[in-house]
Length: 67
Image (tube, rainbow, N blue to C red):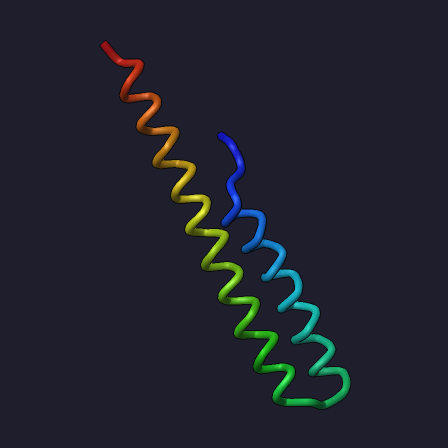
């Protein structure tokens, strides 16, 4: 299984969102907390899309190998 752009970018966004959310909570900034949660969830969705894309590619390769 390979790694694609959506997987990498999604996980980076997710991590950044987690950090942003924690900073928002720490300083008591509700707007930053909400933005962090949003970025975290968008990143997780993008990473999941990348995971599904890779699984589909792998399944297609396996199907091509079958006689």
